[in-house]
Length: 223
Image (cartoon, rainbow, N blue to C red):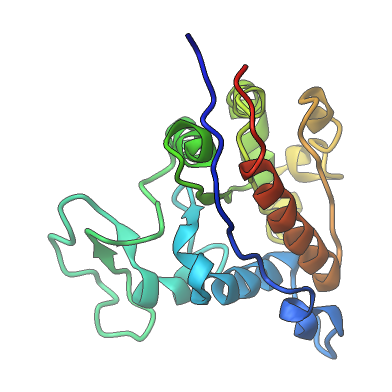
């Protein structure tokens, strides 16, 4: 019979003041994507950061995530079999058998499947993971919306989309204007969508999201 094995035990979440530097504001302007990457890097450094699974369909450098490559690595089952063109730089493209970042080309359905596997691991295997599925919102949701709905139906936890850069509306046409997908997300009943404009908003969403995820991972259910 189908069953859900509830995760037993504690999983420490960042304290409320963990993102204090972002809550206080900044004198220079930063994009919400840049702020999120800085927060993600900060979370991955703590003990519970080993459970974080950044999942990116090909666009990690576009989001400024190359700063994570050297320390955490990009997962590859065979390791790195070639020398990247940026091997002599500080932020080189580094693949590893024990890499933590998942990035394998523009294959959003496959990446969403990995998000589902990681986001339901707490009930299927008793091993809580914290996946972040990071993608261009204008190119992602309308292509894998049914998979995201299935992810929520399985009580998966954690997901994230990144907005397009400011120049994209002019370069990529009307589909990038006015965040047209905000309403589309309402079709998933248990998905909570935000459109933050400031770093402190991103910090609050991430903080509360981690706390809510841990609460979900500890829930007991046999249905």
